[in-house]
Amino acid sequence: MSKNHDHVKKHAPRTRLPSWLNEDWLSVILAFVIILLAAIGLLGPNGLHIRF
Amino acid sequence: MGNSRSHTGKVSSWPLGARIMVGLALVVGLAITAWAITQWIYKQTLPFNIPGKVLEYPLWALLVGLLGNLVLKLLNLKETLRPGIRTELFLKIGLVLLGAGINLALIAKAAGGAILQTLVIMPTVFFFSWWLGRKFGLDEKLRAVMSTAVSVCGVSAAIAAAGSVSAKKEQVSYITTLVILVALPMMVLTPLLAGAMHLSDPVAGAWFGGNIDTTAAVVGAGTIYSEGAQNIAAIVKSTQNTLIGLVAFLLALWAASHDPQTHGKPSGKVIWDRFPKFVLGFVLASILFSLGVIDGGKGTAIDALKNWAFTLAFVCMGLEFSIREVRKMGWRPVIVFLIVTIFNSLVGLGLAYLIFTWLMPI
Image 1 (cartoon, rainbow over the protein chains, first blue to last red):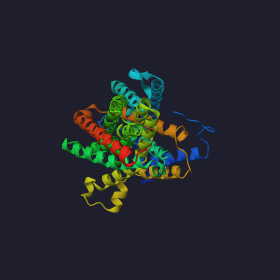
Image 2: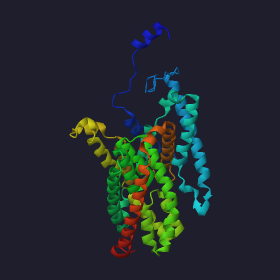
Image 3: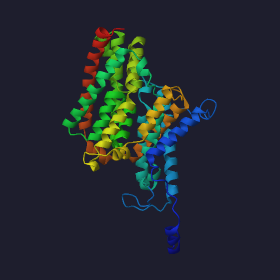
Image 4: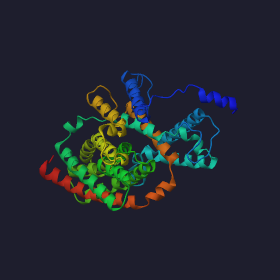
């Protein structure tokens, strides 16, 4: 990596996640997205029927 | 997570995005392998007519993960791919989805005897295990996971407790393996012993349900004994299962208020910061399921995705497994687990006999 590249990287705007969005909240959000998709029928027998 | 330098000090030349994506792809690939093994085992009948279903999927996911761990070490890729190995994330997604299949209303509908038995046996076994674990010098988090696994309902309870108290991955995999391996002989032995003692169907069923840790093994023991015993065993086990959320919630509260950084006097804000938010998701999902708003019961897509999330989590646990941590735990947890299982069996038998023969006979 060139020195110039390092400089660009150092001053580039950082796309950080909000501080409250930790793995804990992320798991809740992702789980409720799954629940929502199942509730509206996108997941299940009439949609993407995932089985185990 | 964003560092290219691992905790062992080795520097990975891979970009972080590639490390995450390749790590995740590996975890998914191993989870599919574990699933295929599980599907094959579930169709088999083991020696002594034991259904293959008692060897539940966490065991295979863990084993496949351990094999992957070995290969990654040999290829010197473990630290490179670590950012894609997200045990906590998969575990917590699975736990919230687990809540979407637990009906809180069941506890009101279940037979009075099952509720009474659960309310007596659960705290008795939990606190006996907690006390014995302390006598043996076990770590508090390991004790919380073990006590919940033995007193509530095995694997799911162990996972929920581990999330609530932020237990180490090695502690969860250690207890989960113990739960599954001990449930197997229990499933065969308890119906034999019940037969030798000429127990009635309700007493035998209540004993299996309150004593054997995994749901599959409870149903298996009931099936071996009689249909009547199977029904009662399922009711007692389901009553215990409904309490996972409550136990997880109380443990989370306990862990948050016992954080060493708070010096025993935590403020409301600190408790909130330390409190695992997935427990709230779990409880909310349970309420929505109980009200009939969502359906995460057996056979649904939510139920399948819950199992996939747990499979991914157990694969990750296998990948992150450290033999050094297990050596540190030693044999003492096994001894405590076995003593508590024997205690659970005796108390469970006495209670089942007392409740289903004298107090609330069916």
